[in-house]
Image 1 (cartoon, rainbow, N blue to C red):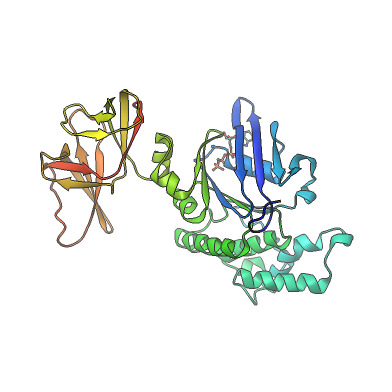
Image 2 (cartoon, rainbow, N blue to C red):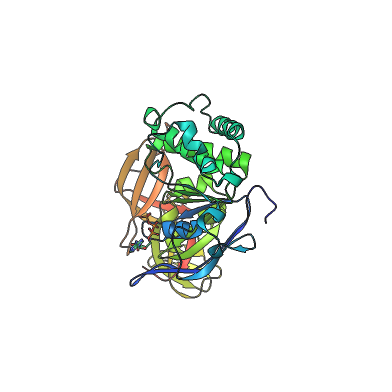
Amino acid sequence: MGTRGHGVDLRIEGVAKRYGGTAALDHVDLHIAAGELVALLGPSGSGKTTLLRVIAGLLPADGGRVLFGDTDATLLSLRERNVGFVFQQYALFRHMTVAENIAFGLRSRPRAKRPDRATIRRRVEELLALIQLPGYGDRYPEQLSGGQKQRVALARALAIDPTVLLLDEPFGALDAKVRVELRRWLRRLHDQTGQTTVFVTHDQDEALELADRVVVLREGRIEQAGTPDEIYGAPASPYVFDFIGRASVVEGRVEGGRFVVDGQAAGFEADGVADGPASLYLRPHDAAFVAPGDGLQARVAALARQAGRITVELELPGQSRRLEVDLVAAPGVATPATGDAVGVRLLKYRVYPGQR
Ligand SMILES: Nc1ncnc2c1ncn2[C@@H]1O[C@H](COP(=O)(O)OP(=O)(O)OP(=O)(O)O)[C@@H](O)[C@H]1O
């Protein structure tokens, strides 16, 4: 059993799952500490839901083990695993009130383990307060908004005091503004409950804002696992860099620890990258314009205005892709014009071996 927060720590050891020729999970190893909130992040088909279902016991793995604390979960029945699960689509029982929905897991326990009616009622009231819907117990699901339904689904999952809380894109069906509100709310709730939680999402902002640790999946394997700062600030591969935010790429070579670009005088530090073809990855806000002659030499190809920012698209000699640099749109900020020759200073970037 873990010591931090509620619930147990989870160990996923060599878990594999194939569907015909596809490895949905390719020998995944992952340790989740008790009380941790972990986001499984990846594009469609990367294996997030499969991993969550294997942890829940809803899907048997072909190989490997899942441990809840010291217990091999594969030896436990679904009931004994006692996981809380929330799906993307509010799977509330429509013919039951909110209170009945929340009480469902407790009421359906075998008689010997079932709390008495008064205890269940108290627990439901506590949970309604926790999800900030006090007084909503007698409503039916159809009388709730989408966000309220998902909060009730979460209360229902928490009612059984689960060993681990598993959430599969729980805010996926909600509009963008409600999603942002609910993920902040979920983070605060987690700070209160400390429940070991695994959260599936394909939305990098959601993962970075919500989770203690983000696990990036790619074709059934873990590409990188780390804190949001590590994942965003030090992506282990071009795949993670690209997936986690906007990226511009410059192709070049590493020579003696410097990244050099054909036709450019400026070189860039590339410590630890072996000599040979390489790519420099850059976030559009991590560059600044300087006088031509300094930094990378480029020509402004186009300007795109969005709310609060201008994205400047730059052409570099010999590069097939344009480089994007963001400027804050504000009075007094000089904006280059299409056709201008500019210098670009790189404030932060990463160099990876190989070219794509
Ligand atoms: N029941 C199934 N039968 C056959 N193949 C499946 C089945 N379930 C999943 N797969 C395949 O396994 C791989 C992983 O699927 P999974 O649903 O875990 O991905 P995901 O990352 O959750 O994607 P999404 O975000 O679209 O839900 C995919 O290639 C998928 O096509």
